[in-house]
Every structure is written in structure tokens, then in C-alpha cells.
Image: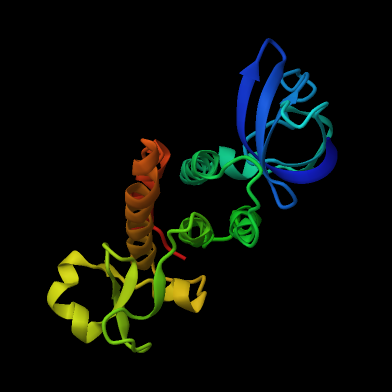
Length: 242
């Protein structure tokens, strides 16, 4: 088996003195794991960094064997974009951990890959954290536990939606949800509108909601927890300004 592709590095595990097992998310092949001979040599240290975007040739003698990644080239380096900003590092590590734990090897990422790519593409924009929140929202959809925010679960109306049920993940309109508002999540209006300039409080509400659904509907079933790095994001967003 042999193929070529591109992708973001989301995990690097040392193997021996100079080599590594590298995990990538690729638009062509989804999540792939491959062995890289000499990845930890001084010449290659700048290439094999979490978040870097590389091209590669992958080879395995038989399909059951681990891939070997060869002819690797660094296409875009994001190390400098993260290394001097602890908030961005927290978001990067949280994203990479969620991708590693939630996405199976060789799963087709489909349109979900766009949300991953957008995070990196906009990491130097002042609304970079918004793109992280979109990533988590679409991760739910990719995992088959996406929210239904198109209409009120009770009345069927599509206007004046204000809440999301923590039990069903369905939208609730203002008049129905008002008596229970303290037990409901806020409606993610900027997600529905694809508005990338929301207020910080809106982002915090979305992250609280996506984190709850990820933990309850996926991570718990696999004896996993939300990444430790992610817990800092709710603190970051309180002072976040666009």
C-alpha cells in the first residue's frame, strides 16, 4: 500500500533515539499514524512539531502494517504562531488531544476537516478562539452526536430560539424555555448564523455546551475525559475581546 498526502501533525511519540510515531489529520486520508525514521534528528526537529502542516509519502508492505512516512516536506510551520502565546497553545493541545482520542484511524473527515483547517488558517486573527469553538461544535456532528438547533423541539417554530436542552441537544424557543432557563444551555446564535464576530460571553456559552455534550455523549462511553488543556479555555474566554 502506498499513497501521498498532506496533513497537520497532531501527535508525536518518541520511538528509539532518533525516530518517532507521528499522527496526522489529512484531508485525503483522515487520521493516519506512521513511523518516521530520523524524525528526532537535529535536521528534522523544525519539521516534526505539533500543528505543522506537511506533505508525505506513505508506504506499508501489507495493509495491516504501520505506515512508514517518507519524503516529508514542511509546507507550513505554525510553531512560531503558538510558542509565544500560552492561550493558543492551550487551544492547540486541546484540539489535538480531542482529534487523537475521538477520531478513529483512517476515518474520512469529510467537511469536518474544514473546521480543523480554519483554526490554523485564522490563528493570527484576533477572533482565533471563535474558530476553535466552531471546531468543537462540528466535532459533535462528526461523531454523530450533533445538536439539532434548526427548530424548537416543542413547538416546531424556527424563530425566537433561545435555548438548547442539555438532555436532547435540541433547540427550545424563548416562551417554552423561559421557566427552565437556568437548566438550559444558551442558543448558539453565532454558530447558526455562521457569524465569526460574537462576544466573548457567547463563546464561553458555546464551549460550556460543547464540552458537556462531548463528555456525556462520547468521552464517558470510552472512559475518557476532556483534555486538561481545555479547562483553561473557559478562563481565557472571559477576558477575550475581538
